[in-house]
Image 1 (cartoon, rainbow, N blue to C red):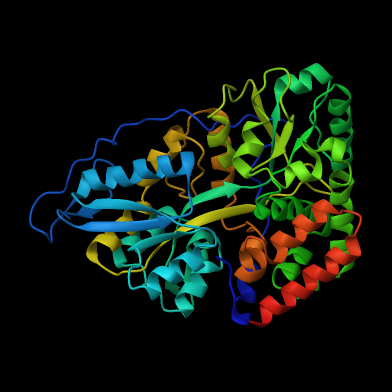
Image 2 (tube, rainbow, N blue to C red):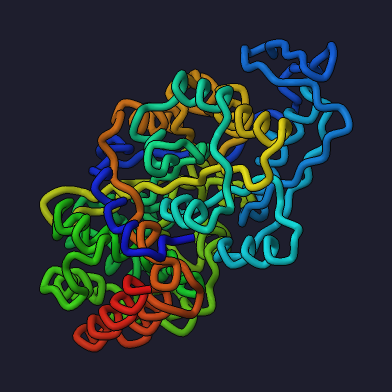
Length: 462
């Protein structure tokens, strides 16, 4: 969900770069963890009573209560989130149903609300969605218990992302580092390739791998959001944080020379089909999960040696035979400018149908208890500063999480997630479609800029 009103253009002012990853090549896990219920029992006493769980969060008794929570997560992400919901059920006696939602979720929720059957809660995967939902009067403010957990466990910056005009609505349960490149260590070793730190080195490494007989880069062109991540990483590194914020708020046009520079740089990769698995046509038919798994299957002859993907791609790597830290490793997205870029994203829980049960689930999602469950399962980074780093499966995952927490309020959010949904968050339209067209024809930089500006101008006026 992206913002769709002029008033939301100010959202970008709260973001600054986050240093989530240590310099050099590191490994990241997307596997491991526990299938237990966390040791918490159901609350006891009358319906108004509360008692602390083993880890401290207080939840009411909710025997017989039925709740629904909608999210766009599928596969491993859905499975791991279901573990969190199961623990809530065990502790409260409530029954929680996961409702698979389509992207963009704002359209899905709008249909549900219009039909009189909205879920009790929803996970909104774009920063502007909360304000849009508030303007539509879809969501309810967070209750005192949820706000208390947020105040205890979250920095002010993450709390502010879930607030509108001083009122708290959202709980950012899951964060993401979107400035990583996963690579097949065997493919690198066989090619004699080294981990790049700059864009120039990245292209040189790609050529070295290509010469070894393996296609170097996997691109999930079928999912337009992955292309926005490519652009944002290049743009942030080249143009810098100030320009990044201006473009996110449409205070500068997409015809700005800084956009031309970023597209030209990106075209150095997209313009060489031999460097992309399946070429442009193949990439445009490759969805995100496949872009990851094809990098780590096929033994000595994978379909690609590298894939730019967020930390949550670890869950997809776990579906292959590759061992993270040995077969599958990562390095920071290469610097296309003076500094390496770091772009982050996140998923926020909001209440759509106000009730004791819904508020209790929101409170649980703001707790360290809930974050610990998914952290142990892997493929997850929490903005919860009170979560013990020991919950993460290995030292690298702990390091990434620690860097996020240590950054405090100094972070910058995914650009497309700050924009109107019709431009930055709709399959087949706006930025997603325009960058897919650019992948087809990366020589047409000027034409791509014009189309991006035309689509952005319409969206920001709506």
